[in-house]
Image 1 (spheres, rainbow, N blue to C red):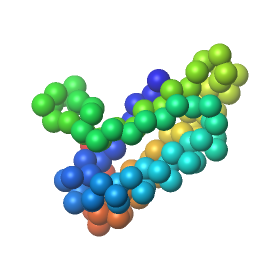
Image 2 (spheres, one colour; image 1 turned 90 degrees about the vertical axis):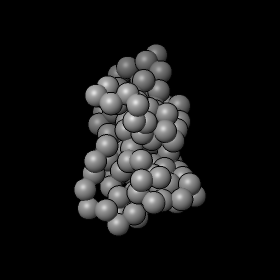
Image 3 (cartoon, one colour; image 1 turned 180 degrees about the vertical axis):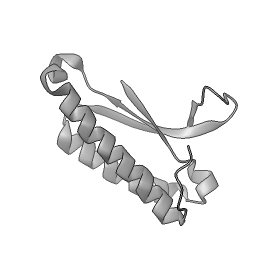
Amino acid sequence: MSFYALPDTCKLGLTEAQAYAVVWDAFQKIQEEASRAMVYYGQETGLKKENPDKPYDEIGILLPIHEFEKKMLQHLDEIDGIVLACREKMMEKAGNDSLQL
């Protein structure tokens, strides 16, 4: 299971609909790359180690090893890029120029 922190959409001023529109595009791209991956998105579900009282949005991807072991690293590289693009799109949509998680 891989977890990725996403920007706090409330702090960015994005509506839930705007955030889900960006995340949905990422979901579709992840499914194209790894069709049997299980993906979820949660708002304010993650906790930072350095500040456990401060939640953040996150996206989680489960790649079942029995189906992905031969191409696991390739899939993870692709998914890393998709999630980074998702983060950047959220920041762009909110009009922010820095990516603080």
